[in-house]
Structure formats: C-alpha cells, structure tokens
Amino acid sequence: MRKLIRGGTIVTAEKSYVSDILIENEKIIKIGENLSQDDCEVIDASGRLLFPGFIDAHTHFDLKTITTTADDFYTGTKAAIAGGTTSVIDFATADRGMTLMEALDVWHKKADGKSSCDYGFHMSFSEWNEGLSKEVDLMTENGITSYKLYMAYDNLRVSDSDIFEILKRIDQVGGIVGTHCENGDMVTQLTNQLKGEGKLSPKYHPVSRPAEVEAEAIFRYLTIAELAGVPVNIVHLSSKLGYDVAEQFRKKGNKVYIETCPQYLLMDDSVYEKGVLFGEEDDDEFASAKFVMSPPPRKQADKDCLWDALREDRIDCISTDHCSFNYKDDKELGRGDFSKIPNGCPGVEHRPALIYNFGVLTKKITKEKMCAYLSTNPAKLYGMYPQKGVIAEGSDADIVIWDTDKKWTISADNQNQNCDYTPYEGANITGAPEKVLLRGNIISKYGKIINENKGQYIFRGKSILYDKK
Ligand code: URP
Ligand code: ZN
Ligand code: ZN
Image (cartoon, rainbow, N blue to C red; front, side, top):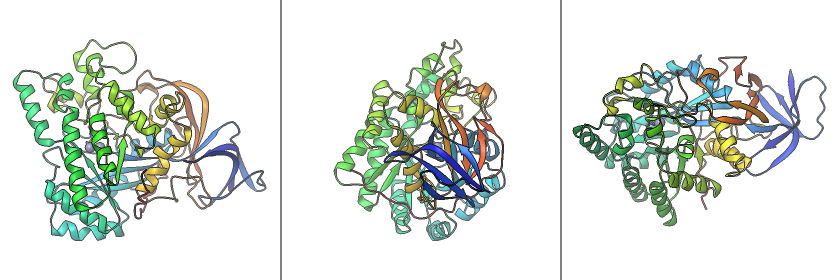
C-alpha cells in the first residue's frame, strides 16, 4: 500500500519547506502540497521535521582487534536505525595475505541477513601489491568505491610509497580514499616512553597520541596526495593543528574532504581526568578507559575550531567511528597498561540526537547543515546520491520523522547499542526520531525497533567529488 507522509517540514542541505511525500514500492514517487490520500496509509507529520535517512559512513561492527566489538551487524544496525541512521558504511579489512574478495566475503557473511538498516563497506588495505591492484576493478563491480588506509596500528599501516600507489589506483576507478592520520612510529615511541616511566593508567592514552602526531601524518598524507594529484578524504579529524594543515593544502588548490565525529565536537581531554563527560566525576581512575579511542579527544580550542569549520562548510561529514567495547570485560584488558585497552567507543545510535541537541539547538549549525553532514554529503562522497542522502522524487524512501520537542536522557539503560556503557551517559536531549522509515517501511518508533532485519546491501557507484570553496 502507498504511504503518504502529510504536512511535515522537509529538510534538505539547502532549504526546508512544508510538503507531503507519497511513497510507493520503497521509493518517494511524489512531493507536493495537498497530495491525494486515496488508497494511502497516512502518516501525520505536521509540526515535525523530515530528514533524509542519516548515513553513518564510519562504523566498525563485528570487528576483532584485541577482542571483538560488543556490537555486531545485528545489534549495531538496530541501534543505528533506532537513532535515525538508515545506512551505515562499515570497514571491511583485508588483513595482510588476504585478497580483497576474501575480505569482502567475510564482511558479507557478518552483515547479510542480519542488518536492520542498509549497509555498504569501505575496503581497508593493510598492504599493497599487484594482485590487490588488479582486484580494485572487482571491488567496483561489487559496489565498493571507497577505501581506508591506516598510518598507525602496526598490523594495518601502509608505507608512504604504498599510499602514493593506492591513491593513484583508486582515482582511476573514481573512488575515494579516507585515511586514519596518526604517525604510527611516534605513537609507539611515546607509548613505550610513558610505559617506561610507569605511566600506565588510561589518562596517558591521549599523551601517547598528541595532536602533533595527527597533524604530521595529515601533512605527509596530503603531500603524497598532492604529488599523486588526487582528491582525498581525512577520517575522524580531531584537532585544530590537523585541520590547519588541511586548510593549508586546500589553499594551494588541493581537494581535501574531512570527516569528524561527535566525540571530537563534544569531548575534551578532561574526560581522562573525570572519567565521565556529563555528571559527577568518577573516583575510579580506570573509568576513563571508556574514552580510550584513537585519535583521542583534545582541548576546548580544538572543539571550537571544528564547530567553526562546520559552520563554514569546511568539514564534509560527521560520522561516529562506532567501535564499541564493553567496559567491564573488554576495556578491563588494559587495566595496568593503557596500551592494551581496546580502542574505540559506541556512538552510532546517538549521533543524530547529539548533533541536533548540541549543534542545531545551540545554533552552532543549521538543521540544513545537519542534513548535509549526516546525510547528503556522505551520500555524495560515497557514491549513493541521489538514491540516498536526499528527500526527492525517485530517491529511496529513507525518512526520519523528527520530533523537535521530545525530551529524553541518553543512558546505557535505554540504548539499543549492545554495550554496557555510553560515553554520553546523562546527556539531556531535546529532539528524537519519532518514526524512522527504511525504503518506506516503518522500522522504529522513538528508539524502539518494531521491524528488524530489513537492511540491504548498498551497491555504491563513483564518488561525487563536489567542489570545495
Ligand atoms: O579508536 C578507534 N577509533 N577505533 C576504531 C579504529 C579506527 O581507528 O578507526
Ligand atoms: Zn581510524
Ligand atoms: Zn574507525
């Protein structure tokens, strides 16, 4: 049966306007005022905002590092869509010795038939050779058009010459490479130095990965990209120092896309002293293990810089880097040695609420910019636009009916994320996804899943490398 969403305010990256939306066969077939409701299931959205389904282009579900993440595709995608995220792009990783097709197969087995939102995969290289280069065409045929490289983590990082070759190869197929920019050698060196001095608690994690380590890697990465003559993407940017380097390269005419995450907009390194972001300080020094992620949150000036950049369209996407580990069993592995704490934190469920509450309601960004950073830009950059990322005739009917007045508090007790904590515990939020539609199907209501396992693989095309100012 057709669905008619009546009277909501459609938000796009450019403007907002009141209109009805007619949905048939999973697609938006008409947008207009006073559309006929004959033979339709009518959903009243008056007084509500209608966002295109949010896209989280940076998740790690069912990932084994020191231990395995708390969320797999079953729980992670339920959490995603409960919060308004209708598409995720997770990172498939070809470990050294693996082919790209093997890695893709592993990730399909993790996700297929278990996902409640739509999903795609970036492919991560941990080495480079002729065989992998040949497989890039196969990746394109399989709907993979974006890639990740690591400049840190000894088991994953690639050399500068490999980065150069990979960037050129991916550019040939119209894809985009996003890179984890931290100088891996310096992280290891600083970590060993701190451990040698007996500095072992979680609060030394950020000391082992200062902003300089990110900024140096960004400088090197963008130099390599300039020599290769290709556009590139920086994932999970955390620091002003790193941002300034990116701007320096943009001023020379290089095309540089930037992703940041809620944790770098909302947290600073005081979480490593207090062990909480909101509320009463935790007396247990180990509580700050909940905030061990890489890169780590920085200073107030860094947060200000990133918000300013968002206000001026200088950052492209806000994703989460959702990589959840339980506090009790997983983070515990690093008690007595911060370098053994599994890196990462949960966030896929709460990103839209956090950005709406702390970004839009505080007037740091407009709701249209929120739409751009959480939906339209990632859809373009990762080859899904206009199927995803916009409410338009012909697009998938992925729609978030947003209640701007709903007041609630983020807590581990009310979350869908399969994790025993949330770093945003106690955050008082105004705004919530009243209903979330995935290709026309109502999947969740106010954070409760009513229809699971409807997610499909997104076969992605070439990146739309829109111009930067
Ligand atoms: O701490 C983090 N971010 N863990 C996930 C892996 C990564 O670096 O993106
Ligand atoms: Zn990373
Ligand atoms: Zn990540």
